[in-house]
Amino acid sequence: MRAETLQPLLRTELAHLVRAAVSLEKSAAKCAKLEPSPRQSFEEEESFDALTSKFARSADILTQKVLKTLVLLLREDAPTFIDRMNLCEKLGVIPSAKALVEVRDLRNMIAHEYATEDLMQVYADTLELAPALLSAIFSTRAFIGERFPE
Image 1 (cartoon, rainbow, N blue to C red):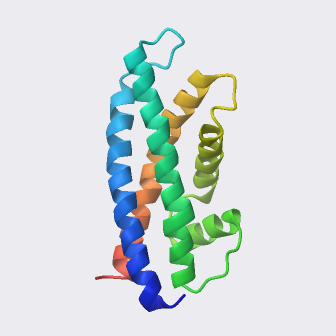
Image 2: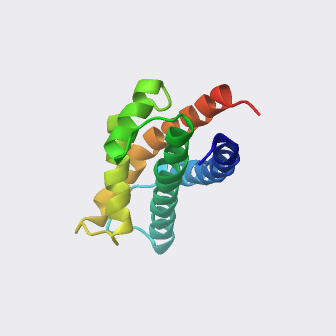
Image 3: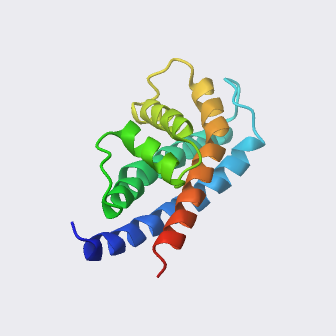
């Protein structure tokens, strides 16, 4: 793809990502006041389910859309997920490749219908990693704004 095609695509993907991040931030703030527990209310469980869904969606948009498109636009070679995260950290797009690998692992667990037996741990891990994901999102947004001003 050419830059004339990739830049508008990147802008569209970034707009989707920012909307998803705002929603994730609100859910994380709401759930931060709650304690993951097997005895939680139905409403609390719904709040944590919404958080994990928003976390997975935001992680997908960032890693599978925005960062992939950005790497193509920068004409860099990073064929694997790990390569892309390491490159993005090296370029200053994201604060930590390691954190996004952890985000990706948790996203995969969430996407596979909580393959773990401890749902409360998934909720706790999501609360713990949401700030790292949000930091990567806002860092990516700043990088794109500086590198590709409108």
